[in-house]
Image (cartoon, rainbow, N blue to C red; front, side, top):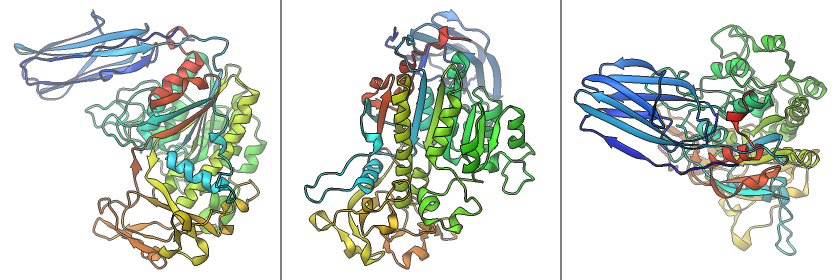
Length: 579
């Protein structure tokens, strides 16, 4: 039975000038038994005499007190949980001379009952940066229109046969525009977090790894049910979204620590398939960015992992723990790997798996766990190419993700005790505003068709071996723009070798890339001059769901609600499921 009680907030400050900050923040919501750290920070204390902390009216002991500077005091208590459902009230009272400073916070704990209809497995798919407009552009490219009746020729796989469907709002603890770290981490924990944070609250220390933490869905399912856990992405593996289900840091750029936490942290995934070998090889190896000689390729095998580094090896793998590194950094885009195949983009990596290859192998590996599994799959290069406004590469990566979703939907049909959720972490300011006649060359404003003067896009008429449109065969395409940009030159077309839209001016700013301007039309940007690329937008996001508990996702929801929707589908009550 779900237990939910509304919360009350009271904030009372005495005459003292001291300030007080407490985490978890007022209004925080957890699962019963979900672990979190408590952090209290007081500053401008003139004559500290004592502190009293209570939870539900009872003394709360065990806090470790520190003082980082004169007049500053901190108290930390780790690995706490709310083990009964409903509203809980925490109160902090600090005696400062003859005055007191009081802070009262309300936290809510929810629990769900496991039934015969509860999900056994959960697969979370994140299209990084895949807002509604990105999905729309991908559908037009993949399906096009019937010119006889004006109807769309179909929907993407992620848009069909829906059993759950929602629009998702997203914002940070400290900003209304999210980055990939705190937004994906919000999905995994139900907690609002600051930009660049992964599953931690802020604190006043410089150490980015000592911040107060809270458990992720991956850690919870490992701890309480012994489920298998997998991470798949086509970006480097220590990037923000893949790290969101299993690691903790205030700075998403703590790549070495994130790599170490995969193998030494509380989650310890059983399947890790991605790029970014530079964070897992010793500093003495070519391309490494580690600061020590740790070699996770060797050490993972001592922990029972099979290691693979090519698509050929991946497809042959048959183990219960699998570690795959397929590039020194991010994968090249789908267009680069499957259609352009330029050596400048592929380098020495000529046998990389597709996203669906990694998804299938992850599922068949994880399902060997009798307790079920949780799997995070990211289409990460969508975002990587939206930032430099290379929308062709970005949209074709959505199509690679959609191909992956098609497989996952079939898996859910055969395994109805599995929940499949497809969503995004944030959006970009992308928009389709017209057609473009590719036969008239790049950078031609008069080749842009508006309303009835734009020809029907014909990408769908020629497809590659994977059923995905062949870009080079298209004659009538889309005109696509972005609402926020640096100075750049618009070509309306693509280059087989990636080109940055803006380059440094040597004075701390960025100007349009002169190479692109040889064929493009100069666009004056509207971002600060020190911005080199397009940035995230606050637009709402799609969520599609199938399988057990898919009905939990409907209407307009906040990103943090996804965590509780998944927990409800699983019938999760960590307070009663401690192994």
